[in-house]
Amino acid sequence: MTTGRDSNRWFRRYPAPAAPRRRLVVLPHAGGAGSFFHAWGRAFDAGTEVLVATYPGRQERLAEPCIDRMEVLADEVTAALLPFADVPLTLFGHSMGASLAYEVALRLEARHAVRPAAVHVSSRKPPHRLAPRPLHLQGDEALIAELRRLGGTDSALLDDPDLREIVLPAVRGDFTIVGTYGPRSAVPLGCPVHAWIGDADPSTSVAEMEAWRDVAPRGFELRVLPGGHFYLVEQHEALVRGIAEQLDPVG
Image (cartoon, rainbow, N blue to C red; front, side, top):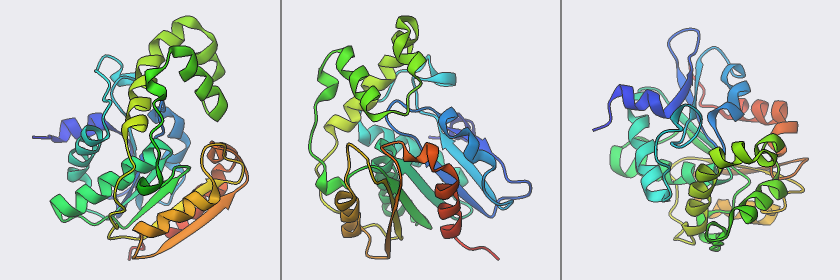
């Protein structure tokens, strides 16, 4: 049984100044950590509490074993979110986090009768368009090359052998999730879906992001911003502003 203490372990919380009227749940990419989204913590209005997921095996959870299966990670994140579901939840997931946001949203509604206000997916093909890519079965250099190709990872972490040794277990665990997830049925979500993509993303095309429409009978919108797989760094203000415009309205 997940306790409040367990839930707090799963998220970096950026509390609203007063009692929150809604929460934005941010789910990082493969190899990503909560600190990547630190600037999001105070980027929204006074009624919005931001929760940034902290996966096991990195930063403050470095000593914990990594999770390498989507089903397990989605189950854990879903359980950890339940104490925060007293107000509307909006999910945002980037890359691997987009697949996770989809799976968590399905679980919240099907198992707990909690329907998210919306799901935002970024830089990741929808579940029925994914193709297995067993990069996790290759050596460390292949993983590092992929991180360099996509960008978004501090080069110091990749250049320093000691730092690489610390971060690579989490990277390999996440790439195992990515490499073993999908394709699977296009199960529709019970909330609107907002898709985001950089126009020069080397791993996902605009047309592939458009296919998220297949799981979004309650409404779909696609926005294309300048940039690559980590467009959200250079386009931080535009992305945050766009998400803020779509947050569940409160009275």
